[in-house]
Length: 176
Image 1 (cartoon, rainbow, N blue to C red):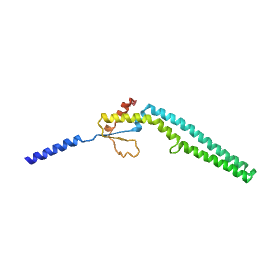
Image 2 (cartoon, rainbow, N blue to C red):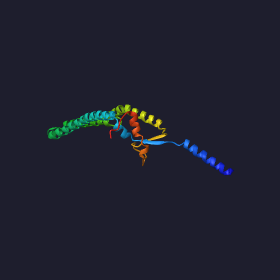
Image 3 (cartoon, helix red, strand yellow):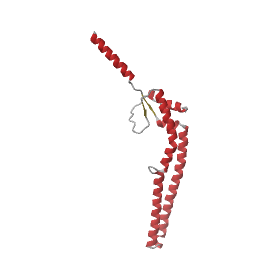
Image 4 (tube, helix red, strand yellow):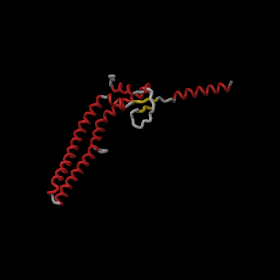
């Protein structure tokens, strides 16, 4: 009997302590949240305007280079070797300028990505703050992002999706 009581008490303490240390998990879909946020559409439109202007500038440079090649080909028989090489050098210099422009604008640390980060940073901060408040309100130990590329989430139960709570925290209503 004493042994049974000891085992029962041990089991009871184990059960209580496991419930006290149990951690609550949830997930959100940051893409869904971003697409529902009205400021995100504004940021996307502004980025698209900038991108289109820069793309046009790049296309104009490429068109200018093509035109220079066409002119060179048309006048090739009339030019001396020295004049031909000089023109070819000018074309190559223009190609170099075009590549530098594309790299400066659309490269890894280019102006486009810097502008994107600059415009998205305030919005991401708002969303992160809302995520933090939702996590605290719901006593979540871990909140995963379903939309992140290497998330490792294979299955999600919709009961644990806190995306709508984050939208509510941001004051955004779902119109669906």
